[in-house]
View (cartoon, one colour):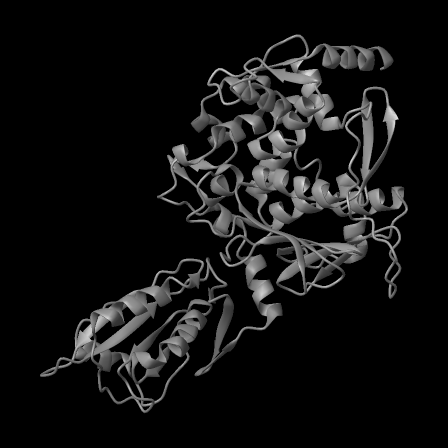
Length: 494
């Protein structure tokens, strides 16, 4: 549609009342209400919002300054997902005033749309907030080739992706038998095409979520983590916000759990079998599902982890599969991923272990250590899972909480599984930190240093070859005699 003259505006206004596709606003002082209606038109069959027209259909125009155009542009940018909005400034004859028209065509394939995080709909000539049930229905219908993850981003280039993360995913897939061994020798573009992330030289949104490094254009790739004092959000003990790709965020999430949950375990040869107060596998599976199946189209949402004295809550934007009862979810069922490309890459790289059994795995792990079954909640826009500790009883607050990690004495005779992996990888070799990380399959360097390398050097099991210059450009690491003896002792016992 083109609206270039006042006659075009008059042709558009067929009566003195608003309709399902026409909204009148006296001035851009009513811009917010006009944008809500524009969002409703996007969720319907399209329409036009006219500024400079009274509610009786009289064309009066309004003054347009540079700030006016800037404000309108900023308002349009708050539509999610990005929408095709035509903006026209139609001059009034013999006047400096103009009629401003915001027009959108039918956008059925991309809906539902939100303005400032809220969806709107049009009923006759009235704009209202869209009910959650209808929003969920439209969201499920939008899947397939029109979903957010398959949309290309012309600003995203291969250099913006983390090559180490890509190759780490490939190595994981080869080890798990889900990718051919020849994949390791393929070029990065070929691998991305095989992962369905690159088409005709253009990267889609899923590529950034999985392997991105710069998240300026993807604020929704955010993980919020907090440890609260007590059972409410009144006081923080620890509060962190991290942006990154799924692999980096998963590493960060598990590091946060190890930092704030208590550990117990038994000695089995070289390794100390650690058990968190909520099983590691259950927490990891919950986080993977949150990252894999969440709604990424809403840039204002994130995955959040909240640790309290009596429970853990993991929340993400999303819904349970349509027509899927909790009874079916708890059993084996066909997977219905909201983001099939992202889920498939995670499966190929063995991060997502299998299809349709994530909830059952969480329940089984909790039952294995005799803590309450996790609780699964959904309100139509968010999903949250609650894990209770073993001593927690509904309605009662235990005297002592199991969330403070006890510190092991320096002379403790065994090592954690993370340090054990470092010893096994180095063996008789001398390796750089990057080489150790790559062999283990880690992507987050800070996580590697905090949980793997630093504890190994602190226990005098691993030593740098340039101890006087820790940041030496050729720095590498080898086992100490104590480390070699411990590794050899462990291998003999297994």
